[in-house]
Image: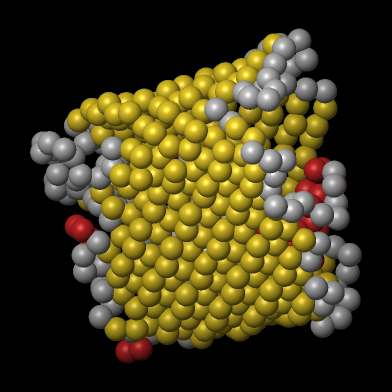
Length: 475
């Protein structure tokens, strides 16, 4: 239950207080046997407003992963069916934690048949990822005042042939990615490529990989065919550490994908930087940009818990015990039905001590529309051009064996570019919470929250102060 002095996040002269009841049922299950694995986690954020005429809300979250490997059948299948919550208005309120304000639900279904076989030193893989996404609410209206929906189908196909013969091997990738918006007239966006890579080990810790490729691109009513040159460097300086960087020269300039990770028993440090041609639906099919809190906890426990299944259970218990969210605040996806050039970076550090834990997650994303070499016949109804920065700092302190205190600070700045010039949003949130374990299956949470919001539409700054209490019980 939450008591807020500005439930609608309005300016001071329009602020209204309210009492909000939230009920979040959650189910977690796992089933496995000979040739199959099913792993699921579902929850629903049910919200009821006591006094104000705001719409009561039910936001589903979570999904089920499955993998089927028939013993006598060469074709395997994995997939996921889920619901994810994103921002309804990318230049509106962001908020920290569970909140129904400015939220919408995207339903996704993915089926991925694949074959993975080895013949001597030759490894070959054939895989097709097929993702359908549905958004019940439109992102806006088009020129004819009709609702504009983002329902989409994303298909990724990959054929990989890899020779692992020593001392030198090779790898050939033939890939295809197609993004189609099902309820819009815009043509589909397609990326196809054939890539040859030759890994060359320099030392036991370092290898380089020259690459040559040919790519075919279809977007904005035009088709391109270009040659690609590039390479990758991999370095493993210490145990549980990695540095990888790939760079290619493509038709839009340099593309890169770099990441590093250093893991120790009590801390983890990681970062990424990427510049690539992409599409809105393609990114949402592999949501999200920001690092997952669950993934960070998994990295920290990798050093002490070696078995994957035991570690997955340990991560769940750690997150439940410390009342951690499933993910930190992710970068905001701004809709466009056109191809986009996106440059992003992310930095994450997590420290876990006996009584204290510290997590810092920072990201920066710059998205622009890819200009066609020839004039496009249709102007885009929406543009994804934007620049954004976000950071979340969380510190938790164990007061006793059953009590935990946490302080979180979040800031998000989203600035429109191109057709979105004039759109801007600034969000800041400070939150203090205390979680107590009343029994082996029951927990209690109480907290205070202060947040501010300023947007171009508000023409001012909205402020909210809220207090909340909650009860959790695991059956």
